[in-house]
Image 1 (tube, rainbow, N blue to C red):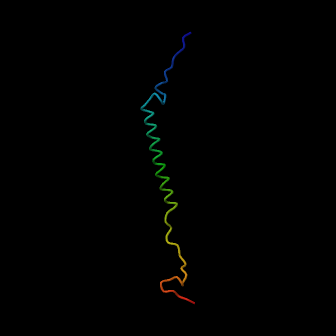
Image 2 (tube, rainbow, N blue to C red):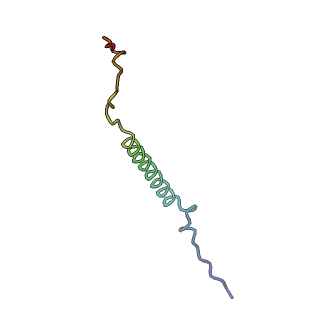
Image 3 (spheres, one colour):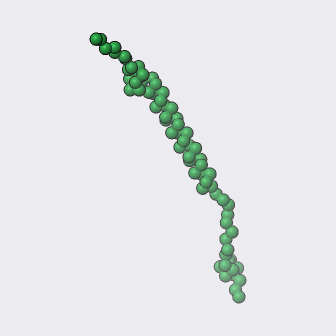
Length: 67
């Protein structure tokens, strides 16, 4: 009995450099976009909220006021 040989090398990731390079390029694009969006989100979360009100004691002013 003769066994049938099925050639699946054209479907293999390692043997088909066109599909593997396209896959690797798409992974790189996804990673770059994910890092950019993550960095923008981090900058948005830690953005400058404005000057907080600062209580300055009156005896430390340029013209101090004493009791």
